[in-house]
Image (tube, helix red, strand yellow):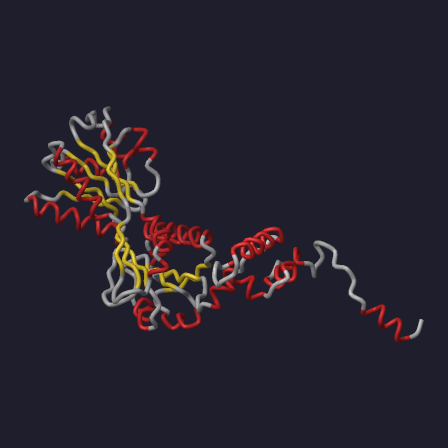
Length: 347
């Protein structure tokens, strides 16, 4: 065989086995692969798969059938990049979060909910410290999620100045495109207190955490506002993060004449046990309403009246509103759901 013949044999296209590195199945089916099979241009393939253009219905359906047969999956990230999107959400992490155990737990739950929801929508999450607005230009995010109104707002202001939509919990930023999510704590507190009032309670005590978590501050502020409007004397007892003082604080409320307890610190079962140990009957001798944010099952099993809020839904609400973020002069406002479940607990 001559040199030229050997060269010709070497350059002949060998058949591509299914599953090899160069086969469509291994490298991912492209528009070009579908176009070759369908005998049309890649532009026609794009029009058919995106339901655009003026293709005949039968041609459009044939192309879609071929795409499905080949196992074509659109590259969402490539499409997003072509549209100027990054498919990433920025999550603000407060530098002082680690100094407060309750706040750190709350932030972990918020981040976990965002990661799970982002993954379901094909997004990634970029965590940014609240004190480093200089990192924002390199972050390449579509939206900034600001979960805690107590964090430093320098990063939030930098995002707003760059036209990046901001999603904030329990914080309204005027003249800034984005979304304000009201978590429902204020409404839940008012509902719980109104329920206790309706059942005849005259002196309602509040159990709240010794914490700088804004959620706890919101709860206490709502309680104090409610008692002021009603002309009632507030009775507040604060529980330490380790719950070592819980029993003492329950008895403190009772010693101060409380005939009802609203447990904003979420310790319904433990408080019920403390009341049971004093031979009090719930709800005859003392009323009890507990806040629930994560797991209401223990309160439900005991029959404790509870008010349930759902801050973990904030991430999903953000994705539901993602297409409208940045439209209008200011942020949209969304209220998260909450429910009051009555109980009939007795000793």
